[in-house]
Image (cartoon, rainbow, N blue to C red; front, side):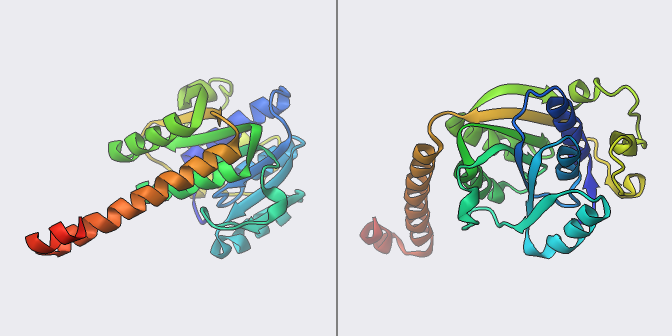
Length: 240
């Protein structure tokens, strides 16, 4: 929550373009909001926005929201756990920018996205390709649960903003008066960034049911595999 990553800025440009063009619905929830840039830009474009992150991040997030006088609700939300019931199935646009840093977090992230979505929800997911193993793992989940309507490269998105140049990413918020010292807190990386515009393959409740069934099975297999590794050959046969 203390650094603004490049993916967040690219995502904010896409959100601004789509909301200004009125091709996105206006009830938006951001996962892993961090400093809150995407949420603030969406709010300045007229969206009703909920910004979420871990409890430990809410203090700087709320400070940024207050400094920019935006009406954005900030809530603690840990992926894969319970969240306020009024959000379930009620969100038109779910934004997840740079939320795929760790492979282990992806299942919980997907579970939460499905839980928030209704049949017409749009998901905007920005993924920096830092490690091929993480990207391949993410692709498996996207194939299983989502339809990819668009796959956009960073340069495709930024082509709509020729005024943006390296080390001047702060210009992205110049029309919104977002009070962040972006030039001092942008975390630069050389990895390519892809933005996926997604929708659920089926009814999200049904997909979520299948998701939990799949992971219950995988958990049981993992337990058996763990016992197999810890036991002698004779004991392994008893376990299996």
